[in-house]
Length: 133
Image 1 (cartoon, rainbow, N blue to C red):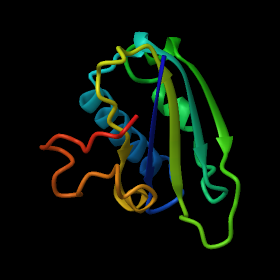
Image 2 (image 1 turned 30 degrees about the vertical axis):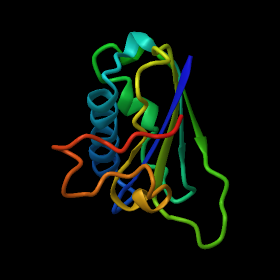
Image 3 (image 1 turned 60 degrees about the vertical axis):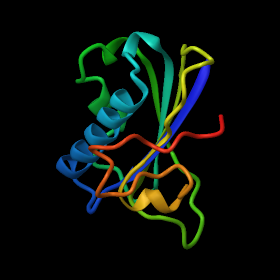
Image 4 (image 1 turned 90 degrees about the horizontal axis):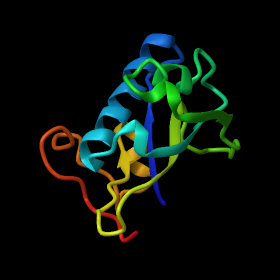
């Protein structure tokens, strides 16, 4: 069993903005890690307290195969001055120990883990930075 982390941000608290960001995040996750929903044990999504337009898990469940993945939405602990309008995930999945793990940090969330983040101009076309995990 392996764990994959990721995060992104949205410009505004709307269903459309959250759907776009979560979709982009999950597409990068699947592409970079060659992971399928049937490999996943569970997904925990957290959102900052300024996001309440829709549950990220509700967006994920509309993706092919994701309706059978155990998912949970929680509110991220608020820390004054922390990144706003942020959506995070923690995924537990069955992946070979030899497979590299690519943690996905997009948009302003790239500041959370610059060592794991993709340059914005490259994240659609080049390989992600591998973690030490």
